[in-house]
Image 1 (tube, rainbow, N blue to C red):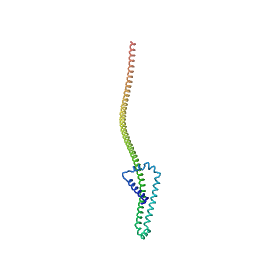
Image 2 (spheres, rainbow, N blue to C red):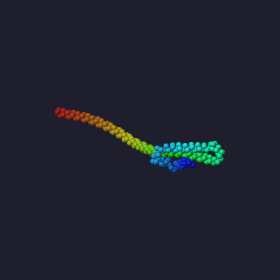
Image 3 (cartoon, rainbow, N blue to C red):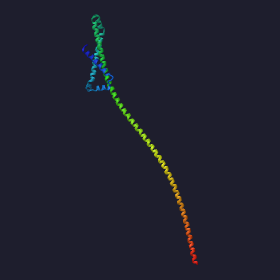
Image 4 (cartoon, one colour):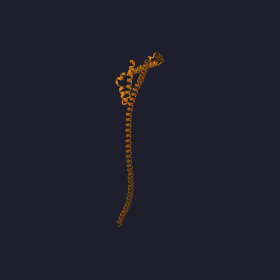
Length: 235
């Protein structure tokens, strides 16, 4: 195996190992995001896309070269040479096997390189989604707590208003009873005043009658005195 295909083979093994590590179930996406946020990756960010596309171009070139080699040793011309020189049969099949091996190595390397890039992107997206979900869950819990607090406050306010209405109703009942009692007392007082006026009027009439009787008696007394005085003068 030449140096370039040995490097591609090691690159394929590294890709397999990295993809297996990325697929470990007990390592969460948030932890992978923290790993991808290391300072070294931030330093390599300007070169990341360039390296990715450069490696894709290299793998595509190697894959096309492997396809060309497979077609070369699978064609009719090598088989014709084998028929002419039977000693070349093993050599042609060996080269065809190497070309097919190189085709598989380069093809799987290209495929896993794209898969690894997509896996890293999805892990980042999942981590961001989990963080947003956690934030939304915290906001929802806070909103539920505030709503529950408002609901409790509304219940307390309704209970306070109900108690106040009951107290006001009781006070209104007491005031109604007091007003009825005062109305009865006023009615009784009016009747007492009316009776007092009637008694005063009766007393006034009695006093007027007594005064008239007194005047009549006084007049009769004067008349009797005058009669007695006249009789004395006649004697």
